[in-house]
Image: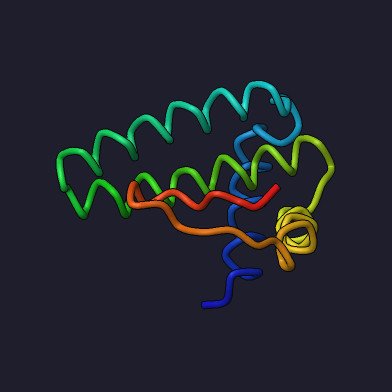
Length: 101
C-alpha cells in the first residue's frame, strides 16, 4: 500500500470520527506530543513493537493536524526537505546532526 493511499484512509477515518471537522491543529499537536513521549519511552525500553506503534501514531496525529489546518502533509514534508537539502554539518558522537552555521 502506498503512503498516499494510507494517508487518505487516515483522513477518511478522521472525518468519520469528526476529528477533522471538530478538532484543531493545537489539539492535534498536543496529541502528537503525547505520542512522541510514548516513542521515547519505547526507545528507552528497547521495545520494538511499541516503537512501531508510536511511530505510526505520530504519523496519524500529523496527518490529522494537517487535515484540521487544511494543509497537505506531503507538501509540508517537501517544504522541509527543500529547506534542508543543501544543509551541511556533522553527526556528533551523541547521534545528533549539528548543522553548520
